[in-house]
Structures are given as C-alpha cells and as structure tokens.
Length: 219
Image (cartoon, rainbow, N blue to C red):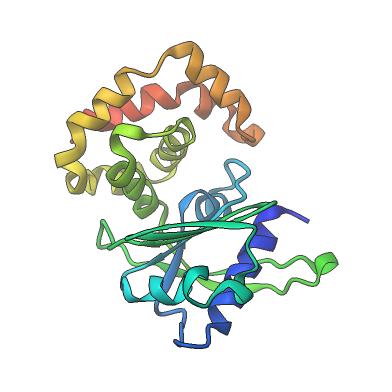
C-alpha cells in the first residue's frame, strides 16, 4: 500500500470524526506535492497537506486539545498556522493559508486501495498553479529542491497561467532569486537523484533549476 493512500484516508476519516466541530469539504482543500502528483504524475509523494482558510479549525484538530484518540499520531507539532501529525509512514499537515491566486480548486476522484480496504474519494484539490504559487510565497528563501522541480513541472504544463499569476509573489522575488542563486549545482543534482521522479520527467528534472530561474525573470 502506498503511504499517501493511508495518510489521506487517515486525514479524511479524522476530519469526519471530530466531535466538537463539523468539517465539510467546503472547508478544506488538498494541496502540496501529493496533490500535484495526483494531477501531473511527475514524482512519488507521500505526505498530505490540507489547507484551511479559517484558523479556528486548528484548535479542534490538535491532539493536545482532544484530537489524540482520533488521530493516533506517533508525534505531533503545532504552531499558530499549522498542526503536523507524524506517523511512521509519513506526515499529515493541516495548514492555515488563504489562496494566493483566484484560481478555484476543483473536485477530483482519487482512487482507493482495495487491498488495504481504503475507499476511493472525491475531494477538493488545488490547481497546480495555486500549488506552485503557494510554494513560492511560503517557502521563497527556503525553497527545497523538490519545490524547484515541482514548480518546473507546473511551468511545463501551465506556463501561461503560471506567468499570468506571478505578480502575486512579486514582493518575494528578490528572496526567491537569492535562494536559487545559492543552490550549488552538484548539490542540486544529488538532491534530484533522491527524489522518486517518474521517467517521463527526467529531462524536466535536469533543467528544473534553469527553468524556475527563467520563470522568475518574468515577474
């Protein structure tokens, strides 16, 4: 069983079981690397990032204030804008974040895992451009190598829409450019080799750093 199947199932069942608040699919969206994987099939990703707009939900999601039995996490971390649940197979992050763009999420059918007894779901999922812009906005000066690859893949599929929305991260441009300039080529290549990149994107991986630098020049 793939880790993301297990973690997504944990997250959805947990959200449906919270005793103190009713959470519907109008309240959250799936984003991050796994959401991108489900849409573009570019690399394997296991962790689950679920985004809420309303910070009040974090109080009810935290194992510290009553969610421990629901989540059964091995460990957890929390701050004002997130709750991170840690399991042997990966992590579930509940994150408070407004949309960066005006691109609405869409509903996507996500396959289950019959062997593990995990049902299929239809869930709200962020558009790849929204995912890329969130990475640039929130992680700018600390972009990870996998973020660079993800953004390059989004540029490959949705270049015009991505460029049209780059103005949303204009204030972050200098920090992002500085981060990209400081990535050592050997380190970049070694880090890329550690990612589970699917064969169809091998050439995208090789040029990812140059691609994202070029995209940033268009802000």
